[in-house]
Image (tube, rainbow, N blue to C red):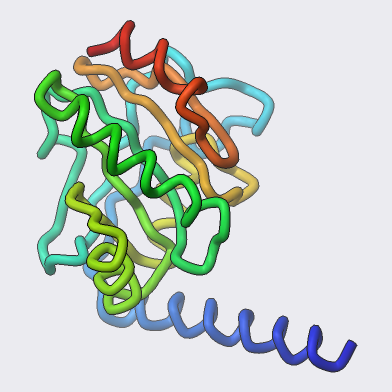
Length: 184
């Protein structure tokens, strides 16, 4: 019981540190449209234009959805400390490798610090963009319909910037295969 309490305190301190560092060092992020951010969690965003965001990458640059204009985006919210997130990563790498030439762009958005994300991407051979942060990532995740903050959480955005699929939890290949056929 004592170990559980210490672990919970450590996690809370880590998240507070991420939040404070993101607020101190990050440039302001443009908020998502209010209509998207205030939707109740039981309303789907399917058919809604994707919200904009501006997040830093593990390579030190800022990235927005407009950087992927004309691509079908599979946006995956994750963290290095999340077991289901870690489990689905090889499948996401495979999806990018197999479908990138057809117009798919996987984008990982990590609730993590820069060094952890860099190390993780290197260890797992992740070649798609990894964006990261703390409070700004949570705001972006909520704008994309993840009001409960579930990880992993994924969204498919078509070439025209319209949300076509939302999924809380680990993605299985059968969850996404038909969607990619329809939107690539």
